[in-house]
Image (cartoon, rainbow, N blue to C red; front, side):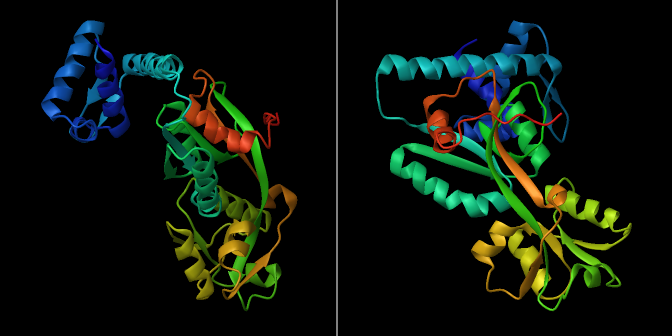
Length: 296
C-alpha cells in the first residue's frame, strides 16, 4: 500500500465509479481496479460493493476512508510544515445552498483572491442534508447549512441570520387573499429544501393540507414563474433585495419561528483544517469567532 493507492481509493468513493475515478486521476480504469483489488487483498476484506449501477463503500471501506483521510491530511500538513513555504495554496471544496451561493459566492471569491490568490475554490450547491452528508463522508471540506443540526463529528460556527419571506406576484394584496386563492399554487424546490419545508409548515398552520406545486431547480426559474402569476414561494429576503428588487414581485414577512434562518459553517472535528481551508474559514471566523451551540 502507498499514498497513491489511498488517493485512488478516495477517488473511487468520491465518484462512485472506477471509470470516472480513473479519468479524474489521469490513469486507466484497469490500473484503478488493480490497485483497489491489491488494497482489498492487503486488508483481507472487500472495500467496495459493486453493482451494474454504482460502486459504494462497504463498512470496512468506510473505516479505511476515515484513516485514509487522516493519513493524506498528515502528509499534506507535513509538506507544508517541512517545506517552509509561506504561500498558502491548495483546493478547498465548499458546499452551499444555491440561494446563499448566489448572494455570498462572488464576494467570497473576491475576498479570498485578494488575500490568498493561490487557493482554488470548488463550490457545490445542494440540499441541506446532502451537504451535511458530504462533509461527514469527506466529500466536502466544509459547508454552509441552515441550523440547527446535532452531529458529534461536526464542528459548527455561526455565520449569519437572514429572513425568509413569502414571495408572490405583484398583484397579490395580502397573505389572507393568497391563502384563499383557489387553486393555491406554489413554486418550490425539490424535497429536502429548507424553504419548501418552511412553506409547507406555514400552510399547515393555516389549515391548508393540499396545494398544487411546480418544482423548479433554480432560483431564476422560481422567480420567473412567480412573476408570471403562476404561484408563490418562500425565499431569503436578501436574494430578492439583491437581484430581483425591480421585478414584478411583492413580499410578505413571516413569524419569527418560520421567517428566521440561521446559517452555520460546518466541517469535521477529526481533521484540523489545513492551511487552505483555515484561510477560507478565517474569512468568516475572524469576524464571528464563537461556536454555534444547537438548541436542545
